[in-house]
Image 1: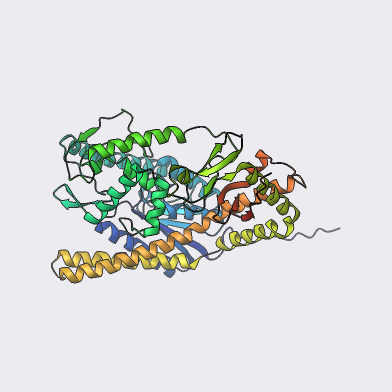
Image 2: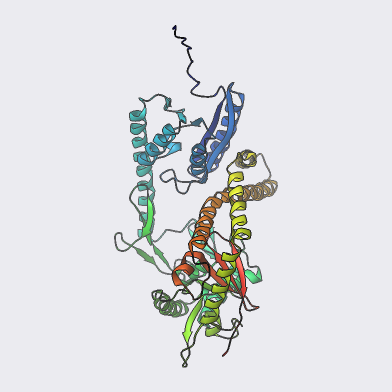
Length: 517
């Protein structure tokens, strides 16, 4: 019997059309760098779009970000995520230093991309990772870029230290209440200074940082750069900032390791305390009184978690944390810290611990009984949303191109002003309009990037569904472990309702049914 042999040709390793992306970055916000940033985006957009056989996926661009760490570069991490999802075949980068100034991170990213079948081409070094013999070249070039970054940083820090020793150091970003007046001096912004004084006085009068932040949000007080949402941390930072007394403590932090991380200076380097270096907003006496009160509060808040509800239950009126109290009769209840500090601060009444536990039991039993029509559909919706945001998003490319154009216009106007070819007032008006446009575009890009959080939320929801499915069919008494596995936090609403936020973000409201017997 004769044998029939059919030759099957090898399949193409890559599609006829390569899906190509580009990554570009500038490390400072100087005008010439802004021009480079815009030029890189425009150049790569045109190059990829006009190259035969290439399909433009996206231009990934990070502005004013450090190249020594990847965790702060939004678009670099988005690039890697899209490569893992199989959206990209090839990446173009101007140089290795633009890709990373950290050799370890650089090689780790390149090895992962090679495993994924994604090649990277570095224009300046003429390196293409499509050939397997270039890793040594990349390692050498990456090491040189790392040494260059370390040298530049050391020179900058040395210059800062010399200015500190002479008492001439002034921060480039003055705190709320001040602005740079030129010649290394700060001056007070009167309307902001009034807010600072009110915050210090309010804290000494018994209000917590959380309630102060809530009141500032209610009044619509704007932040220094236009944002309007105040958090507790910002208030604490104000209360501990010695600059409001007219003095400055320099070198509170230091750069350690490589990639550089900012850590608190605990005696490793000299600190320099410069007195009376700028106008004071508050007195030294008031500042010291606030520090004593903060230390007392710190001791109280650092107490270990003893109860299932500790640090998980908050007040819906003011956002403050609820704390456990036990009456003389032995009844445990949870009270708003603002209510305990002063009844005029928050009208919320204490909630009995037993009522909260009973509400959780009722909520659990309802979810367990109706699992198929409550949590399962919610999980399916989140999984569908997760799938949707993983698809190509042309809106991101459009935003990046708009940012590049606006940045380039900003640079051109600044150059015309520097050359004396544009009226100062007209220039200021145009720059203000462009700054507003850039702020809106970057905010829109951040909102799109936040969709990546859906992956984590979906996984949390899956775990919550698993915990519920594996739990008892009917819960008869409070189970602390089950509570910890299911509930992220509880908010006590003004109408005596408890809003349970489950792991994954799903929220359920259960009304209190108080039994005073």
